[in-house]
Length: 227
Ligand code: NI
Image (cartoon, rainbow, N blue to C red; front, side, top):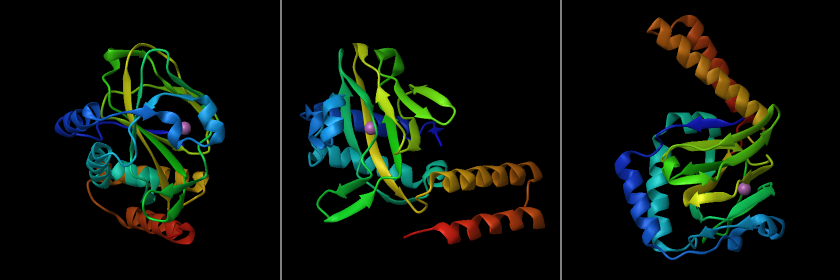
C-alpha cells in the first residue's frame, strides 16, 4: 500500500531539521547502497554517523512516535534511523528495489526492511523534477509532497527518483520493520482501522458493533504480529 501522511513535522521541527542538515558535510549517496542500487544512485547524502544526521533523525523519530497514521500504516516494530539526501540538478535515482535486510548502525542488529518511507524536506516550488515514482499493483504513482510530509510504501516496490531539472531536493528516508511482514495483511488492517475510526466518529461513541470490530482488528494483529 502507498499512503501519504501530511504534516508529519511541525513548522518548527522542519526548520530545525533543515538547519541541521544544511550545515553538515555531504558525501556520495552510493555509500549506503547495495551493489545493484549503487549503479542507479546519483545523489548526495549525509554520513549516517554525522552528529547532524543523528540529531535531525531524532526529531523525525519523535514526530513519527506521535503520528497515529504512521503507526497504523506501518505497524512499526523497528525503525532504522533516518538518513538524509540531496538531489541537485542532473541528479536522480534510477529504478531499483530496496534491499530486504539492513544493519542497524552501531547495534549489531539486522532488521527486515518491510516499509520504505520518504519525508520531503524541500518546498515544492524550490525545485523541478525529483518526483518519487513508485510502481504498484494499480500502476505508477509520481509522488511530490509539501515539505514535512511523508510517503510510506512497500519496500519491495520498484521505485525511482526523477532527475532534478531546477533547484535542489532534500529528503529523509528510512526503513521500518513492521510487526506484520505481509503487505497485504498490513493493508487490510490499515483499511479496517480507518473504517472503525470513521464509524466511531460518525456515531460519536462506541457501540457493541464498533467494539466488536476493534476486537477483530486486535485479534488479527495478534495472529500475525512478530516481535
Ligand atoms: Ni530506494
